Image (cartoon, rainbow, N blue to C red; front, side, top):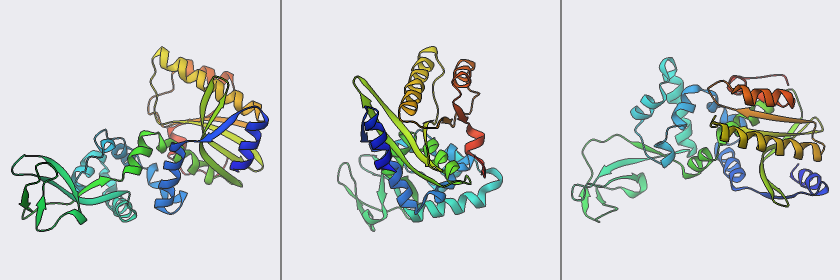
Length: 271
């Protein structure tokens, strides 16, 4: 599919190159085993956890702290099982948060870095492990970089595609350029022999300036879709707020199909 997309873009006068974000996303899928294994993203409490600002700075949390952030409520058993799987797959790394008794530096240490005595990563003082201490789980750096790049909506959109009653091949994140124009294609999919392009946003600002920029980005994406003969151009977003009227009117006027939060978090079976 990648070769066909490149050929279509080049035939229409566009240059194309891979994007690091696409490699992050493919790396996550490889880590989990396959795309369907990413369906834990469909749970609101997992989105809550993975949207945490401190987690996205690679802060390590205990299970109890992650539970408090996620608020799985009646789904505690499901959340526990999901976290076990994510830790087993390496999405989260097990270790300890330790505080040096000399310089007071709080640092996360992996299991492989600790013994009965631990060397402080700051002042290099050697201190004994506390007698009782819960595990702390740090997000994999790949997961962090992917999340900061908007991976949740891209992966959920790919899941939505995967579960349609269709024949589908897809790729994510190509940089497309022509003259002074440069933009990303979040998802390009070959669906029952037809090309679909998709723009994906976890969230977006709703100021006039931000909406102007988003609408221009969508216009560019739609123009590229038309230039390469794509039959469908879609906009998907996890934004929890209603889409602003101005953006909704633009999408409707341009006949750009929208996949909203409800679509992305639901199991679907028809296009």
